[in-house]
Length: 392
Ligand code: MLT
Image (tube, rainbow, N blue to C red; front, side, top):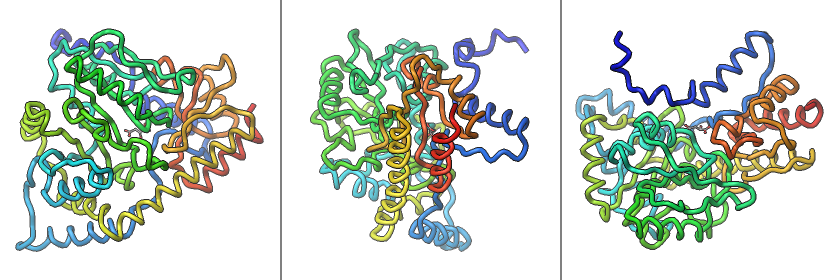
């Protein structure tokens, strides 16, 4: 093969994707410690099964696919109207945000959407991402040959990144944040919206964890900020809201105020995507049903109880922790000077507990470690006992 034909920007990426690195380190450990009972609090993968209302809708849709009269082939690329309406009603109306079904796009996952959306911008668009942050924003732009301006979010600034000092065209924000588990304040979001409106920039707002916000007064959607419909695209996901990490369904909202972008996203999706599975979309619709929503909330309450248990358990051991109050992630400050990847090994070797090294999310994550609250409660409790008793 002539290597000159390959995209040179792939060589600028870290050698492997963060969670693949973590999985490989775990596999190596297990290979050398057969029978080890390792507790995984690394990748934010859910452990609670789908709720009954979702399952029931799924079964019904499966049966429909087995009957000639109700069978469905290709669906609309933008998603079925029933789900787009349910999203407008279930996600936005309760926050007094007016979003119409035409502005909602259904897909098979937020990770793909958030990675693909940058295709709509020119190769020389200037991009800004918070540090630390979900690695997909940075990696997908690196693949396209764009380097990003970093916006540090540290304990000292309450994990509120400052608006860029230079002019940028595309700004990624994630709140509640992955990995710090902290929330952007209304004032911070107002500053970003005002910056974007002034500079003609677009905010790509990742709200994948908004269902975990416990305080109704906190911002759940960027569109709660006046002017945001003129400058922001929002990503929402059923993965963490409803346990769909293995089912795959998500929402990208492109407001009519950004009509050119909305049409481009439709053009992109209709060319490269054939729509999410009908069965999955019926399952997602059931999330907003009268029976479904309380069931979903109960599952989220369970994860947030885990988050509180982790926060308290680590604090009792004398550690400083952030996040975990409105998000399923706990951001653990490591003892001074300890590197995140060194701590990964120390924790695995002494406690057989896996988390995610903070530096994998950016340089500002060095010296931190992320634990997820998505584990099973009993396993999470055991992990904390091991940390208390064995961590050395
Ligand atoms: C994470 O652990 O950061 C997430 O599970 C990754 C993802 O949502 O793709």
